[in-house]
Image (cartoon, rainbow, N blue to C red):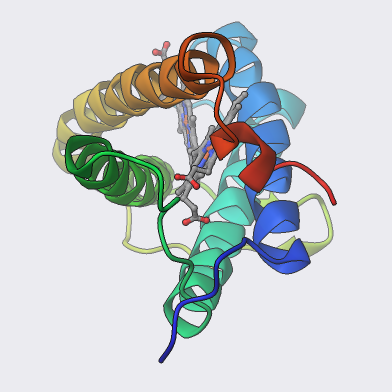
Length: 176
Ligand code: HEM
Ligand code: HEM
């Protein structure tokens, strides 16, 4: 399949929609009430889980779109920047996947029943298992922080292209 030179509208919409959802998801995660034994998920947790599942679904769709609509790296970039940006983009996909699946497993091991935005029941990945729940809780926190660090590096690179290299890399992901 021949790679296009520019990101199309769907790739840009997926990108910025997921950025917007992640910007809401982290504050909800940090501000929602702490979990304690025997609790059932309240509104904040239901929204956290629903937004997380939406991020997972959009990321999967976006990845399929990327596979079927490949985009060539900016031709003016030196090899080290092409390779490092490719590695960071792959890591972003892997860490979004790891964060959402670990959160989903955590909720499943708690034995919760949760609905997707109070609309339809959400299928759970496993049944009630307290020990597995404790193990996966640490994993969700580790992946959520690793994802935040890689997002920080990705944003720093975008800023470097705007203010230091002054090239057109940022324009590639902007509307138009
Ligand atoms: C990329 C998407 C996600 C991000 C960025 C994220 C982020 C977070 C954050 C920041 C916390 C607070 C934990 C802390 O105090 O450090 C949290 C907790 C939690 N999240 Fe997520 N989350 C995501 C997806 C999900 C999904 C899809 C589910 C379930 C289906 C989920 C279930 C939970 C649960 C049950 C907790 C409370 C347990 C805990 O503190 O680890 N999360 N999440
Ligand atoms: C303010 C925040 C952000 C800015 C300014 C930004 C900027 C950009 C730019 C300019 C590109 C194109 C790079 C190139 O062509 O080489 C890009 C691609 C990409 N960005 Fe971001 N980004 C941001 C946040 C995020 C977040 C939070 C994620 C995490 C999921 C993400 C995931 C990706 C991925 C995976 C690509 C590769 C293209 C693709 O596969 O669709 N970005 N971003």
